[in-house]
Length: 319
Image 1: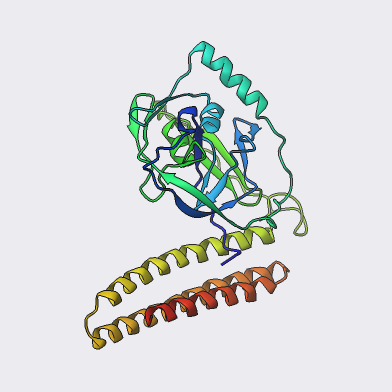
Image 2: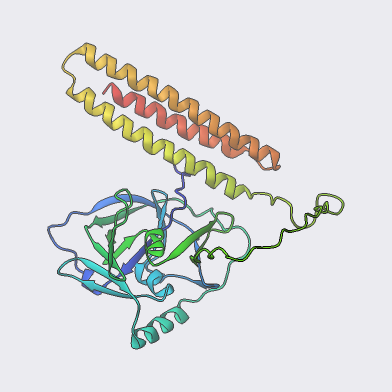
């Protein structure tokens, strides 16, 4: 579905000169990704990756340059082309000067208000999935199998959450402004051995008249509600595709008409279940739009696009 957008879960990439020429025996894979207006905040400063290494969203994770995020986190980066190993570590004095200069050149201004999502559309990218090794301050770590590293035009892309948490940062995501914030993980305070005085309970004052003023629940933007529903629908679609692939394999291997008919019946029953789940989620989305006074025309667009895909997948079983 054209408006399906992958969300959160966030990623990074590293530009390395030795990757400028990909090995001839490697075969590229075409993926569909979404370029998104993501903002990156590190220790109160907003930084942007190079314009030719833009962040994109793939399978729910945002991919951006690792050198960008490593430098933003004040880490040096080394690449060993013989072992395909990336080492991320504390920089020396000369390296820190380079990192500080890089960060100065990558500074940008915070974008206020809701992001412009009108340009979001799937983009085909030719990538090389590689078995790259990652070492963080002497400890070997790997991203999850479902979010592997990839090489695109000489740069290796891997999850930002994976890198940030590997160097002791936590990731915070604001869907209203598309802002990723990498914050230092603070150690839990040790319990005091001295008895603490028992606090005196006090009444909580009621908010002063009306529904205005601070402290209330903020109204979600229409783009945020849409972003959330398409995330859920995309996850549903990926699961449906995986299940359909399994049915197609079984169907091709079936030796009798009875076996094929049984598989076809199971597939159609499964998509009836998917349709029920879809309708439930979209109905919730429509209710949210109505509650906040938003236009509901996107509901029918989602329904039509999803139904087209369901009909297409049902037809594939009998082919």
